[in-house]
Image (cartoon, rainbow over all chains, first blue to last red; front, top):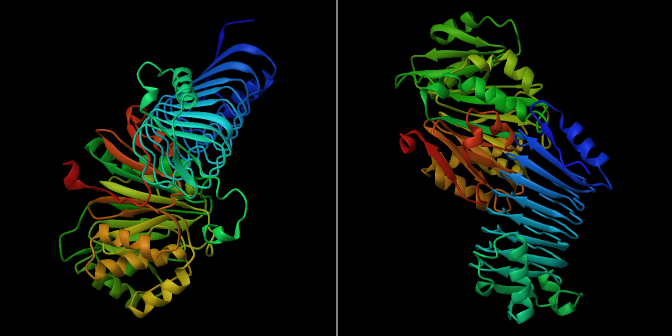
Length: 232
Length: 298
């Protein structure tokens, strides 16, 4: 397997040529790709299905690393809306901040954001894992079904509204909890989960898992109950 | 959709090339708004008691020197495509009234001491070319590319909307209570020339400011009185303001360097500015008013 790094300068090469190259690698492993001058372009490195590494030098627009499978995608800059949307597996790391609905509906894999995320981080999460070194905006983890979010900073309004079985860990303050989201006891298994996620995010040394609080579903909105009609 | 941009120069070098940078930003937002484009540029203030009036004619061969003569303009009209900038030796409100009285067939795009609004239907890149944005210098500007959803694709329905002397508004989003609000504002004496929802937001701001609210208060009033989605950028004599609705589903990104402050619907419109790679960039929070004014950065 070749270890040569394939370079794509998006100031020179059309985005479709990059994404086609990545799609042509489906089923392979080991390739390394370096992307320069993304200049906020949308849909960079979307739909990868290969165990490869993609490094993007600069800021990306919407839907970067969407539907990612197996690949490691690193953004050395900020990311726009819909980062790693519907990701299936692999690792997506953003050095800067990410905009709205980061990792929305992600089924698997890990998303690490070293800055902040905007509103609706992890909305409808279906099993993916997210570690945010900064803070997350309002309505994060809305209707999240499975998976976990670790927030080293603060969380905005209505955290975990209408939550199912996903787990939320926040180190800082929570502006407010959404409907049916409550604080829950941090047991050993939860401490271990946070420590593991921080370790895999590469910040296990600097952040103490013992400082987090856990939030989860009160399970009162799971099924329709006439007593809850006012809450729908 | 729709795309909005704003650029505030902090150095003479940016002021000299303001129009060129603005045009580059608008071109990046073409996909978000291919049916119309417009800009409000702030530059070359006239002395108090004088005014700058930008008029638009349906006739590409309008006799602008003749119009200037009829309205008592000083100097030659500066023509850009089917618009012309006239300088009048009277207050902006009087200048606007003169134009409406003597040439009701022309449309008043803006009236003030500093502002110039140019807007037209058609693709943003074409707009930037035919209005020769590249040769405009100025202190700050806001711009808009439109994808019409709430009303027809017309010059009147294009942004920016003038909201009073040296004030204007651009909008990404849609309002759902604009018909009701328009009726209320008409009773307060606010005039409307289109069925456009953003014009109602502009009229709302004009009304609040007329009643004594500060720009901050007027914008915060939108949070209670406007129903819908919006990211607003407001151009003022001294700078610009940005606000997103509490749900903030319409995008906005801001960035700042020692040379400029910029806002845009998407980062790619900022990426075309000099030094964008090293800029500090962030996303404005929902329901919070951000203001840049000349004094603040001086």
